[in-house]
Length: 548
Image (cartoon, helix red, strand yellow):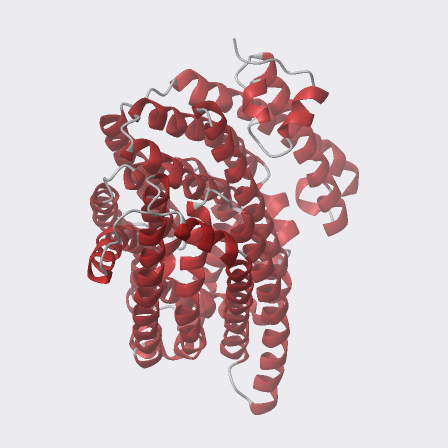
């Protein structure tokens, strides 16, 4: 297989995983609206407070396992060391079972100090999911190391569907039970939603286990033709711990940030500004449960590209083919920015219409849309920093993202404290701080990648032209939306269905404007389209030429 076909394969697999990620995020947003109607902004606050700590323990135990396992196994596969790869797979499975059990115990026993009385009940419901996620992550990493993202993609979609169904049903019945027993329905509803997370992970684990069993003949065939000396289990555990630890630390620092911010926000709002726990939870729920949730959809594309890129980057690097590794990284960043930049501008231009579709509760609609409009810029910063994170991890510099995340965490915490005490802002403080953190990570990782691989990024092609096209797109989309809604109450007075239709038309028109501009200026080429799933048909349909 030539390098060019490998590069296209990476983008195509990333496209499959990204497509699944976007479907997962859309399902997540669609069920969040009825769920929020059941548990309210207060319930969202309890849920997200507990979820943040659940994610932290998950990060420490196993959340980054797919990326770490895919990297170390890909290196063994490219060398033909299939028996060592299988030993590493088993060692990783034992590792996650042990740390997963410890993580579940921590969440169960330390729930109240972590999130207070209201969130503790929710956090304990999350606890068993930490144990289940570890084996699921190892299985996903195993197939990603084989450069196939289909099993992971299918399992993610199935996981989210079950999560959505169980979350809504459990929240509905739990709030009903709370009303009958005079308990706090926001807390009980949030706990019901947490049940959905565990149910989804359990189904995905069963599915991935069946896929692994189905492929046992292929695995045995590779093991039979491997004549390399095998490593001891001690060496395998040392390698797993050595590789996994920087991945976990990086993910931990990335995701401890919302927890620190949440704790500081709750403390200052209640102790200094005199807000109740319920009012503080509502403010935090609007930020984390609405604005932040929406921005995670386009970032899914970058996360998928990063996951698909790690095995390829690791292979090229271990073979000493640095120029090819550079080419993969550069192409992935360029494609990612073509998606992230218009997504950020689009979220800013249509913040209120999009928020109204997903979270139509009028009481917090204006607040949530304003937060989203400002927060949208983080889509660009997080998309690139996610990819450059994986470049550094895949080329043996896994400790660099850890250091960068630590620097960004310290700086953003200082900024948050200053803003909380000296500014009149409420949850907008959380948005400003997140933008600052995302920018610092973007900057530090970019500098490190340029030093590591000598990345040759054409700023005009990668950033400036997509931004110009996005601004034109945003203006056209907003103008069209305004014209469509004008006879029906205007921008702020239109009903839900008219808003839904107008937003859909505006987004589709904006996509056409954006794509036409990039094609006309030759920023988007035929090779770019053909490297994506289904791109060959699209390239032929619009008769786009190759880059010359």
